[in-house]
Image 1 (cartoon, one colour):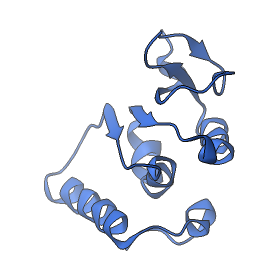
Image 2 (cartoon, one colour):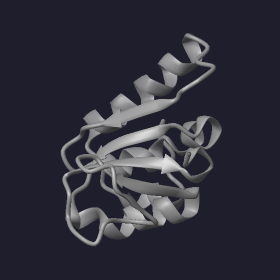
Image 3 (tube, rainbow, N blue to C red):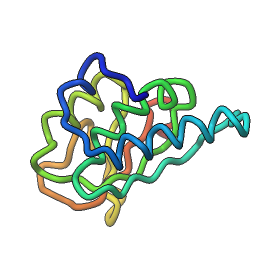
Length: 117
C-alpha cells in the first residue's frame, strides 16, 4: 500500500496511480533493483504526487527525474526540490535553476545537487 503519511497523504490519488506505484515497488523488490539512475513520470498532472509516493526509492537511489510540470503543482514541486536537495533543468534549453524556472515550461529534469557536474 502506498504511504499515507506526510505530504503524500494530502493528495487524492486515483486508484490507478496508487496501483502503478504499488506495482513499481513490487517490481523493484522482486527483481532486486540495485540501481535506479533515471525516472520518467508522465502521469498528466500527478507527477509530483508520484514523486512523494516513491520517496524512499528516490532517497535511496537519487535518480535524475523527468517530469511534466503543471503550474497547479508548483508549491509541492518546490517542497520536493527543497526537501530532497534537487534542482531543476529546463528540458528544452538545459538551463539550470536553483528551484523552478521563472517561466513555465512543460517538461523539467530534476537533478540531485550532488550530480550537478
